[in-house]
Each structure stands twice: as structure tokens, then as C-alpha cells.
Image (cartoon, rainbow, N blue to C red):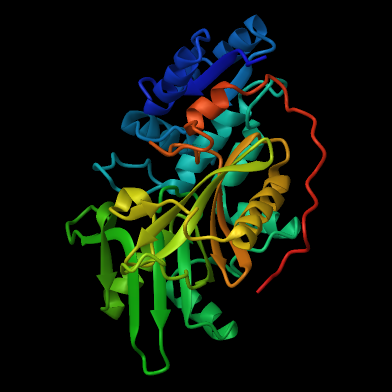
Length: 384
């Protein structure tokens, strides 16, 4: 029997609208909504709502695409950490800053939710997937093949030191608490002193008294930096919000005759691989909102490759066994798979179907409780 739903998310979120529409299409009743904006002031609202509907499936949605909520979470996190620095200033549209405060605030809000509820994805798992470094470490602890970690970095000089120690010439620098490619930088250097950095981050040097020397903005236009001074400034600015580095694994060339390389987004629902799509980019970042294109995988992957994709997805899902919906980004190449990221909110994939259902239509038919099913036999992982 389909679940009764309780949704937690930003007021007016298109994610909430997407699942509500899917419920209507199935002829099911509307989900009750709780908005983060209200929970910030009164977390007791969640206890009351869950007590009213104790069997409801509770879906906690992304707090993204809501600038005022983002600012409130930064403020909350800054206070949660004991006000360790001057009060965060107001951010401009698209500015990437204070991500460590944002995560502390979001984590604090998740911790304020009832511990006992029928969550689609439990708050602790959501926090675990939004801490990308901890997430990668957790995946590896579950024998999931991931990009090898160089570790946390505190700036450009530290990154170069780690790259020398690991004899590594190209890495991805990732904001520890980012999403949607925010703060992700592809960096390479050579023995002749040449270096280049790619990403969706725009570096702005202000030079104004009383302001930060540099600011970083998310850009929908991928950018390339070749100047060492600006590369160092950008990496330092991202690392100031906490960042880590991992080895850059080359993505396979898209086999459609066009220019570009691709990775894959898959959705695991109740531990099984469902929706999947190729994300093709001409640069190192393949996030679809950056103007990259997508393609169906059915014509690209043979049965063995598809089986490898499903196996990798399902093994990765075991690292968050309490979560019923996870989006994974992965590279599939030469019969091997590497998980790049796990996304607690990875289901916003418009016009993508699996067995005739969108991601939200698929979820709308879920049972209230995790169906018991025998675990699929999973082969031993391959590491690099």
C-alpha cells in the first residue's frame, strides 16, 4: 500500500511540488508539508506533525534554492560553533562563502528533528552525505571503490605538498560541504611549473577596504584559470570553508561521436539501482545545470557494463543502509566503477524515467516501510 507522506523542505520548493504532483497523479492524498523556515524558530512543529501521523513516510528535502534560508543556516551555524569569527556578512547572489557555517547550521537543524520517525532518509545519513569528506571515508569503509583521497587541505601550499607526497599531477579539490558542483575545482600541474584549474567558481578580487580580498561566486559558465597567483587565491578561498583533495580519475569519452566525456548519475531506491543517466561535459565538470548535456545509457552500455553499474550502485547504497533514496555519481570505465559522490537529495532529475516513471512518480508508489528483500550478491570491489 502506498505510503502517507510528510515532507520537510523550503517553502515553495520545486522538489516538494514535484512529489506532490506525483501523488496527485496516482490519485493519492496530498502530503503534509513542514517548512524549514518555521522549524528554524520552532522545531517542536516537527514533533507535533510526526505525532499526528506516526506512520507517515517523512522525506527531508534539500534546503537549497532558498537564499534567505541559506543565510539563516549560516547564522545558526556560526552561533552553533561559538561565534568563532566576526559575524558573517550578507552574501551576494551566487556567492560561495561560509559553507562550514552553513553545514553546522543545517546539522543543528537536523539534530533538532525527532530521532524516532519513519524517515525516507534519516537525518544522520543526510548529514553524513552532505559532509563529502566523511561520506567518502564512509564509502571506503564499506569497501566501495572511490577516487583515492589525498585528504583535507588548508590551502594551495598544502595541496601542492600533498600532491608531491602522493606523486599526483592532477586532482579534484572539493568544498567539503558543497553541492551541485559548488566549490569543485579540477587542478593539474606539471614538472615544468605549468598549472591549470577548471571549475564553475568565479574569483573576484575586491581590493576594497574592510572587505574580503577575494570573493568566490558560483558560475553557470565553466572557467579555466592558468595564472598561478589566481589559482592559489581561489584554492585558498575554497579551503577556508574546508575542502579536501582526491585523485582525478579520467572520465570515459562519450561514445556518441561528439566531443566530451561523461560520468553517470544513478538513483538507488530501497537499495536497488533504478534511474540512470549519462552526464556529458566538454570540461572536467559534468553537472547538468552547467550547460552540459545528457544521454540515455541503454545504447552505450552492454549487459556486462550495465551489471557493473548496478552492482556498484547497490554496494554503495549499503554504506547508508537506513536511507531509501540516494543519488550516486560514478565513473564506469574498462569494466570498473568508482563512486564519486553520494547525494541525499539526488533525485531532482526532470524528464528522466525508469520503467515509465519519473523519480518522484517512482517514490510516490513506495510502501511506508522498507520492503524486505534478499540482498543481491555483490562482487568484490576494485580499488585504485
